[in-house]
Image (cartoon, rainbow, N blue to C red):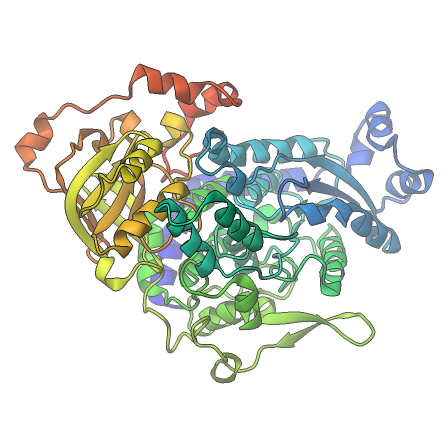
Length: 608
């Protein structure tokens, strides 16, 4: 093993022991109970299975056949989740062929961040993750299942399902993806039109044509944002059928992989090859996910989400762990916004299997972990395919030297795009923050310029439209943390800041909010903790203060003399803005979450 990976893993293990050991004890105790239909009262059993056909009732109660619960995030608002409409029928058919039974245990909410970007609904986005976790718990708390299949793909949905499943850690679980949409208008062309629209060079009709050509069919968006980073991480954690992540929803192989998920989860049920998810997801598996994220320049959102996922399994990680792993992890993939390729091109170039193989072979991943496939992480270095008879087979990837026809997409660990990962930790008198460096030009890794302070993203957009930002500056957008307004993504700020950077100005963003998983070429110090509303130092920044964002040195500093800084009173959020943040479009219902949420570095957890 790489020494840094080994040391970080050991440190996480030691730090987590007081939580992990009781967690595993609870998992073991729950697993030792009699089956649900055996231990429950007759009225409970009758209610649970009332709607099933008689043969299924017989299988569950008399024959004690395995009973699978399905938790689905299906809706047809999300293109990525629309294909799930037909999955339960496929799952049920496969289970019946194998002597098992299935019930859809419940559905969980799934919002589309692409719909809510820049709108009030985005203020519910982060908290939807824990709502999904609670919905997963409600579904599984009927407690009649021997295993679970989890259907979800997008941003908060996969972390929410995983957090919920880990609170039922005694159950074998397999995640079932739906795949990306086919390639449409290139991501670069889409970004260009957005920047033109921000400058008033094209109208709304042209922008809508561009966006509709980009987001045009069923499946995930094809850039490497949070949704597709989810899929990469689940492969690295061994929670998918190997190689299932990036197969199109309507490909024949997709249904074959979905059927294989049923076979896989049945193979994990007790008295066969029992591997509950709470035991499977250990500190090594969490580190594998972290390394996969860094090696592919994945979404910054996961420096929040995977902290929460780990905590659900009794494992404690922090941003320092990510930073140390980043220094040891080479950047092996460039997928938009870190490059020009989309996820379909990434898959064609070898995809997750290629990256995982390179990381295992260089000692950067723990290969000897449990996986749902039963064969360890090396299983996830192979690609699935259908043979002439339609059966599922896996093939080895060619050697690194021959697989890669386009070295702009993936590279071997011996010749990476960069010798360090795509994310960095920043610290200084402005707090702790993270920055995604993999898409930022090298000459923008350090930005030092006067601050312009905004308390809302709308204020920055207004200043841009008024022509007030034609200069070097660091935009400080504060009161965007989880306590203030739910920590929305601020992706709508990318086009105006990109335009200004394109004009030659040195610009950067510093915020206690989030950027989209598609954050790109403008340097952005995000997730600043502690947040401004909680008394964090961003509340002390004044317009004109010189701010230094230095991703090379890992620092985030207001260059203000110590005495002046110490004497400064922090700004407060206006009563009018507090009222706006608390009301309308359902925000009232999330007031308790805003009050009780932990910091971004603690995973923005609301359930502790």
